[in-house]
Image 1 (cartoon, rainbow, N blue to C red):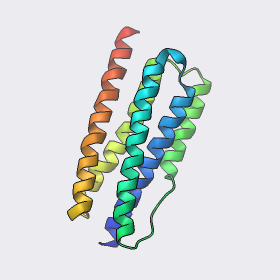
Image 2 (image 1 turned 180 degrees about the vertical axis):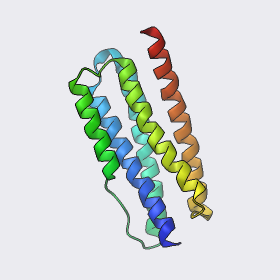
Image 3 (image 1 turned 90 degrees about the horizontal axis):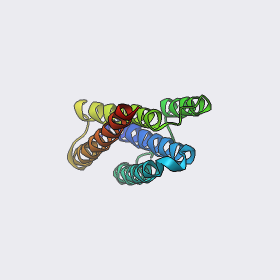
Length: 152
């Protein structure tokens, strides 16, 4: 497997780790009236843990260095969530808007990974399957956000 392919897989591992941290931050900040979102965000956090493990296994199978951290962009994204929560961004529509923004980022990362042509075989199949699940999660969060906005 090429160095570029390993880099792509490690980048996807990082953004999945960012997604886990972002959803865990949101879960901690969500008030009881949005308890349904806690369950949904927990599901997506678990999903990204699974994705990270799958990607890590592929990279480790090639005796390459595995990325286990978070990306700089993800860390900045979480910092933005922290600032927003200080200014009362805890209503349902705001929570879902921020979650969708995060889902936009991971969806774009998967799209780029699939379009750059570096992946093949098991790596390509795994990333393609994960991208499909990420798109479904994004669409579910977007639909909830749209519903929350229409209630305001």
